[in-house]
Image 1 (cartoon, rainbow, N blue to C red):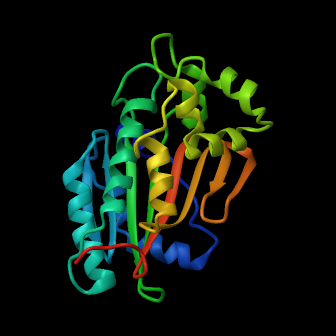
Image 2: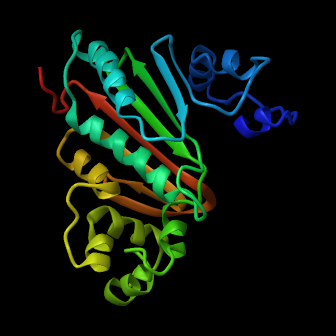
Length: 244
């Protein structure tokens, strides 16, 4: 829809069948933003009704600081540091900036949405880009890149039968170790996974290409429909690691 609107292509659609999802969509300010007359495909950032939406192409460390300040007040009624949450944002931004395109860095937008659930006293995060996707990116790396040719090596060493199993190996750091001979150092998607394992975030779910990883429940499955890009969902609650 962002690209359609920016290029003045008419479109329409339906509301979600789930009434709670429809209510959240209406409260988010999405339509106010979408129906602006002078719309361009550009960076946007706003909080409305305890829902924050941001769109950008670059890595923005100040954004994560600002969001953490606001969402920590929702949960703890005061500002707190959430170092794991900050790392997740930075790694996902960098992942989109560096790997979402096969032709150039920073080509694709990423979108981040933050929603505070009063009933559960938790903040829900969604991050998405419409690049080539994690698995497709691994397959497309050119000679000279540290991950060039890593998929055949992974298949030889671990014999994964699906892309979901390859995604699990990526999150565990096995892909990085296979490609470089070294353990990852908390960076990239393994760093995001590590933040979940360390209770710095909760309920991490990653969807990319035709694979879904429910990291909290250790479930990795193949999808019938493919997502050209990457979608990441996670939560922050009062029991997650924080610093006063």
